[in-house]
Length: 203
Image (cartoon, rainbow, N blue to C red; front, side, top):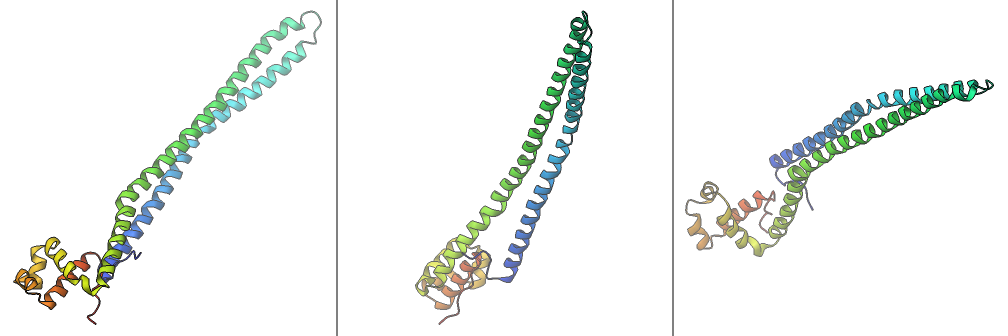
C-alpha cells in the first residue's frame, strides 16, 4: 500500500501533513506529561501531612511509654498520649490517602489528554490517510489494466467538475461516446490524478 501520491505537489502536502500530525502527537504527549507532573506536585502536601502525623504519633507513643513507667499514676497519665498518638496516626493515614488520590487524578488527567489527541489524529489524520492509501492502491490496479480505461473515463465523467471535464475537450461527452481514444485516456488520467496515481504511458 502506497502512502504518498505520484504527484510532487500533493506528495509534498501529504508529507507536511504527516510532519504536522507527528508534531501534534508529540506536543500532546509533552502537554500530558506536564499536566500530570503539575497535579502530582500537590502530593507533596499529603506527604508532609503523613510525615508529620507519623512523627507526632511516634513522639506521643514514646512519651506515653516513658510516663507509663511512673509507679501508680503512670497508666492514667499515659492514656491522653496514647489517644494523641492514635489521632496522629489518623492524620498520617489521611496524608497517605491524599497522595494516592492526587496520583490517581494526575494519571487520569494525563491519559485523558493523550486520549483526546489520539482521537483527533485518528479521525483527522490516520483514518483519511489510510482511506487515501486504499483508494490509491485501487486506482493503481485500474491504471495498470489497459481494459480499465473506459471505466476510469466513465467515472471521471460522473465525478469530476464540469470545468475539469471541459479542459479535456469542449465536447467531452460526444468524444467519449465516439470512443475517442485520446479523450478516454485523458479522462482516465483525470480520474486517476484525483487518487494520486499517474497514468502509465501508452504501450
